[in-house]
Length: 265
Image 1: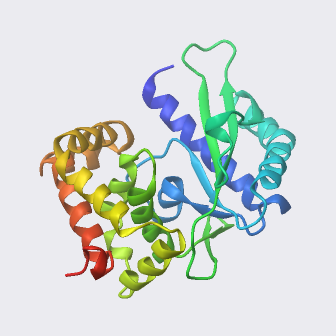
Image 2: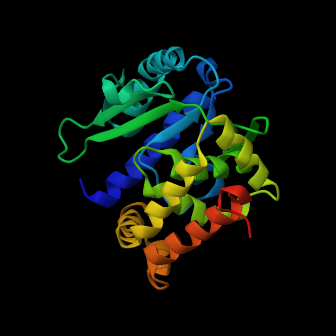
Image 3: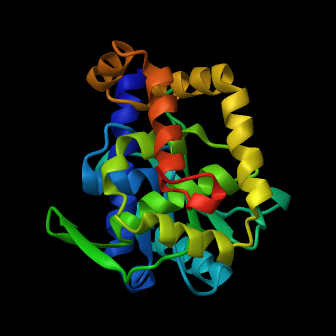
């Protein structure tokens, strides 16, 4: 199977996943977040390898409910519509037993087609939200999500607080910098304090990013090459690609950090 066709199939199956969640009781108050949320609801030029949800309740219980829902409804639907066999299983092991995330592993394949295997993690996690949930509609389906302010602020917190930086977070800050709120500095102060992220930790992460700029620019360029729509990737490359994204994202993060954490204008 050629890569372009596989990418189209992945996105079609992702849409089936989130539609299934949005239209069944297990998905009530399960809020779509992350890169695929941006792709589906805000026409982001970046595709996403996984699907993320915010859940304020018991993460392990919700993980089990999703495994059951996907097994009963999604897997047969994907087989009928796209010809892929599949299975849904809860992720286990040290990397999957975090107190703040539970993962459902979705696996799809075509028995008679080489290079058809698709792995699609569905992460159920918890982010800090200052605003009530919202809904948006796509093709007649109602999707529950978090506010644009909460999701972009969660990207800043991810850059500052993830054990292992994911460069897609810097890219999303670049792409959706216009969604910060006038009071995002204060909102971020409250969230950072609630998470017990220290000034020293924030300073160390900002210094690490700045000191290793060349590495981060290269990593961002790799995401642009592999996760961006072709025309948008070409546009970015005309203006230094990863370097442009890195510079704008870093300046934006510093602008919206609380003043006493090295932010502000």
